[in-house]
Image 1 (tube, rainbow, N blue to C red):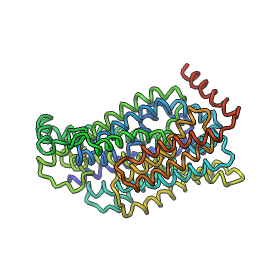
Image 2 (cartoon, one colour; image 1 turned 90 degrees about the horizontal axis):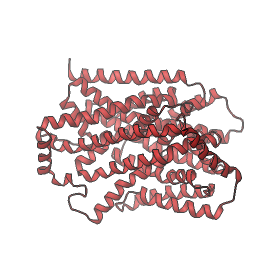
Image 3 (cartoon, rainbow, N blue to C red; image 1 turned 30 degrees about the vertical axis):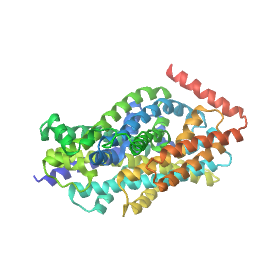
Image 4 (cartoon, rainbow, N blue to C red; image 1 turned 135 degrees about the vertical axis):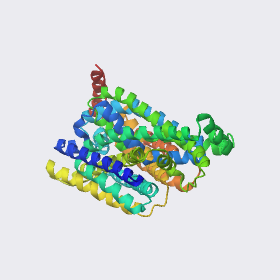
Length: 496
């Protein structure tokens, strides 16, 4: 049997499994809340793996190894920042957001939580946050399509457009009908596949080049700066900006709707603690494997005299040349898993923004549950079509597309999420001003090209704006204060 045949068999098994899970989830989805939030019934291990898999996307298995391959361990600061940010997100946001969203009028989306928590009768906060979700997630989803197209170009020599179309259609299949539960359950399988792939491939590469000592010696002789966390030129202003930019990625976690919605779907706030332990363990192993793959790729490419045109395909190339074709096919399926898990989660959040936070705002009479579910599925399709149009002619790397969208969400929503959970005096106008200023700063700072990741200054600007405007517009509201207190009480009761 040919190598291509083995690869297609592995991918066929993976695609069939994803669609089967989507069908199963569709049978478990009976109303709008089920479709958008899985009935708030996710066990800790499902929430943890789903949050991790939907977080990492194609950049973990393509973008990050490629960046480390090209520049060395200085790119590893992204992994460090993400690990710290993820831990703090599980620790600070998860339990309180799970309790608060239930107490505050059973909010099932991030925009509806902002509106309910801050008693925003103007509805401008809900509409603005929904529009921000649609803008940045369309870019984010487009990056997943770009990664899918690149994947099929590298793995099969097929056209970029064919690969993009295939990944999009299969993901749409299980997301449109399985909803949030379908996305979460497929995330579990995809998360397990992903962590196995990023460990297996670099280990096989190290063995191939003669062991860890030989690999280290080769990398040191070819690119000695690759082992320096501060880059090859030592500590300079450029290096400091690079390190600050890498660590700043961690700030983005607090505002990622497709991640924090998993917190809202937990069975109770007490489940956040075991989910955190599982999720952080998965993330540490996955990120370490991706960084290791980028480093050992330098030695493997040199030893085998390979002409690697695109650094972001280094892990794909090693899997195809090192492993049995069937195993390599499963690794390639893991690459798709990384892409599709994030892709599907983001489609669901976009659908919720359109249906729950825009359509229901302008519709005076509430539609039936059946109509809402149908609209949710149509919105998934619509967002995918727009993202596909943008992905037809990509003009940036996978990591570049992801980093901008990550910064947009982190600055627009992160400060508001933290302040709404822990500061009683946040107001709707303070939140709106923070959202606008954070988003604007991301675009402006990106255009200035200062070398500092736009998320860091935008996050600081948004926090300061929220505090200043809230202090100027604060009016005491007894019901808001009571909800704030009740949230703490619920967390205490849940913990037993």
